[in-house]
Image 1: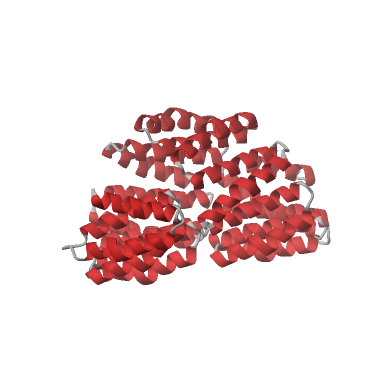
Image 2 (image 1 turned 120 degrees about the vertical axis):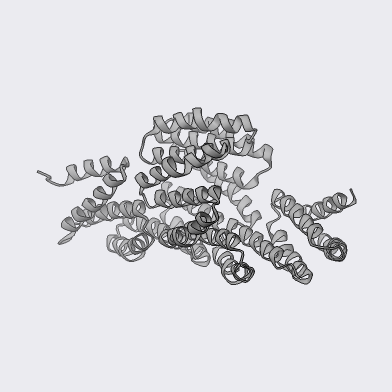
Length: 468
């Protein structure tokens, strides 16, 4: 009982901003008391309880400090290498959630992974390699992520006979396939390899999550009726039965996504405001609340309510990410603010935000894919300014090579199509022929992926070229 009171007091001090008093109580009383006990169980319990509490209160900065400067040294002092490594992993998790990918990778590769190699813990080494692959995927480095999954992570779980971890890893491979636009292979993995495992294990929650991933692929293909059927009949009822409010809210958000794709903006907005947002507010999840507010702003923008969309971005969404110290989400939101400025015709202001705030943030984070996307937005402004040569240069030098290197086929085909349109607008010698070649590449990729963009590209080509 005394330990719970002590943990509650430390949490309250951190949450109220009394950081130094909380640290004093932690370092002068709570940790030293547990260092004198046999084993590390009490210290582990303190760390895990505070980790859960501080995540709940969004005290990311405080959490980073106590994991790095207090718990990690304490486990080292105890001589408990395994728990020291686990603490480093938790630190890297927080860094990843904040978009600090370089620092997270450094911790995984240089500090955590060598511990498991020394200990001969092949399972935890595989888990850590999987976490490294997660960061690679978040940065858009899909080829390297897939190499790690297939060559280093998956074989370990197969040798150990860990069917659940194998299924989870196969799901991560399918995620990468989807990001690359290889929907057929992603669906095959989901249906033939991942889903049957969770059915055999009787894991209804993981089965529902996997069905949701299948619905994601259906949506990418434009098969909205089937995606909605899965969401409403197979996925949502499971989370409601389990009392999983968070997963229910996420699924409602996916249903709202489908409504947007159908053009039913009013229903999408109703779901966001009346069902999804209240769930995250009841959970006290500031990050997901900010994400949902951003999605509401997306709808308002499509409805032409630019002032309201901008107000939400500036006054509600952005301050949350700033408070959380989430540099990546803050950069994404600044980009969305610039998008609204573009829609309002404020091209100079939007360009300044992209160049001076968004681009430097992604460069600091080492997020090459988001950097390329931002350059694409800058190219759009150049095109609208009539600076077609510069727009084409940006796409040719800053966008296309990145998507090719990352194996991001969907982004590549969109870039090919956008570049073709600018070439047709410039209409210099050879531009028309290059535009047709780029559109043929985009059409071929879209047809292989079986996505709705194929019909759009085909109609555009019929309009601008004599296809016989």
